[in-house]
Image (cartoon, rainbow, N blue to C red; front, side):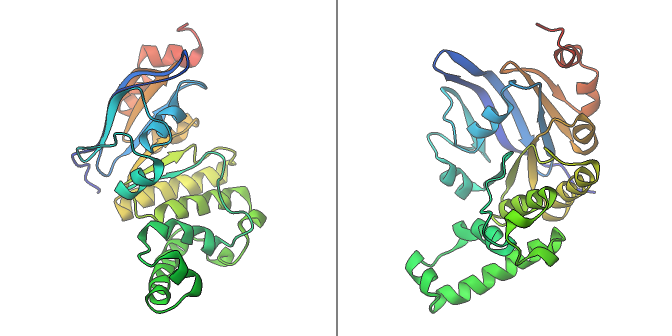
Length: 259
C-alpha cells in the first residue's frame, strides 16, 4: 500500500488572464507526494491553462506555484522540467518519423552531461553515457509493454500505443511530479483500461506523484485520491472522489444549471 506523503506541489492564488479574458481566478490547491490528483471541469473551465501554469508555459499574473517549497517564479518549461516536473500532451507532440526507442530517448536529454558535439560523434564518455541512458529507456519500454514496437516509427502505431510512448518519454525524465493532459482522450474502452493500469503502476512502482486532467469521470473517480473541480476559471470543489461527486456546485456545473 503506497503512503501519501507531505505536500510536494503547492498552487496558491493563481490568476491568469489573456487581455481582458480571465482564464483562472484565484485558484489554490495542493498535491501530496505519491498521490494521484485529478483536475476536472466542463470544457473551457481552465484545466489546461492550469497545467500550463504549473509547467512554465504560461506565467500567471498573480499567485505562486512551488515544488517542495521552491517557487517557480518566472521559470520557463525547461527550468521547471529540470526541477522535476514532466508532462504529456493532449495532442501528441511525438516525433512521428522516429522510432519508439528514439522518441523516449529524447526524454533523457536533461540527464545527458556530454555536449551535443560529443553526442553527435558518439565518442568517449558520450558513447558510454548513451549506452547507460539507452538501458534506462529499455526498462521503460518493458514496463509499458511496447517491446515489439521499439524500432517502429511512432507514426505507424495505433493511437493508444502512441499515447503510451508519450507517457514513456515523460517517465524518461524521472519526474517527481508527472502532469498528464487528458491521457485517455480519443481512446476506446480497452485502451482506457490499459492506460489506467499504467498510470496506477507508475504511481505505485515509481512512486511518481501524478496530476491529471481527464474528461472520463469513471476513470477519474476510480484512480484519483483527490479531485479539484474548476468551472469558468474558478475552483468550485476540492476533495475525495466521493466528496466531489456529492458536491451540489459540481453537480450543477456538469448539468449546466449553475449559470
